[in-house]
Amino acid sequence: MSSSLQQELIAAIRNIADYPKPGIMFRDITTLLGNPRAFRRAIDELVHPFAGTKIDKVAGIEARGFIMGGAMAHQMSAGFVPIRKKGKLPHDTVSIAYSLEYGVDEMEMHRDAIKPGEKVVLVDDLIATGGTAEGATKLLQQMGADIVAACFIIDLPELGGRKKLEALGVEVRTLISFDGH
Ligand code: AMP
Image (spheres, helix red, strand yellow):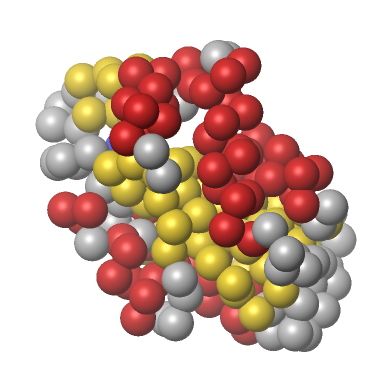
């Protein structure tokens, strides 16, 4: 990926210090989504590695993973599967607890959303500690998904999320990275 595209994406992201709490630099992608060229280029770059590979489903993590995942699924002629916070999905679900910085939460997907052996790309906007994506990975793997890759616009490498997913045998693709939290 060209460094000029990386610079363009970095410039399109808004950085908000001390949100949602002191010491966190929030990487706000709403400005990237609102920028037609940056949004298109980010999605093009994320789907590019899968050209020529049949992807059955894109699984997006609520909520920003829905926006990116919908665009990616459309471009790859794949289906879209939402991975949601507990209690939001109307039909039979499977759920998994995952660790947050403080405590645990649960995420769910519909039991019939993935057939065993389907090729799935997992997507969210950002990977930090990897707790969220690790939960989603385990949920998909439990349902027999073949996770081809997990994709994120932003990596915070100091927090080690990539290594967590790689330990589960999942290839991780990110477009840009920032130092710190
Ligand atoms: P983690 O489970 O620690 O990898 O956190 C990833 C999830 O939290 C993703 O859904 C991100 O959208 C969100 N997140 C974590 N840290 C940040 C940050 N610095 N800026 C924006 N979103 C973040």
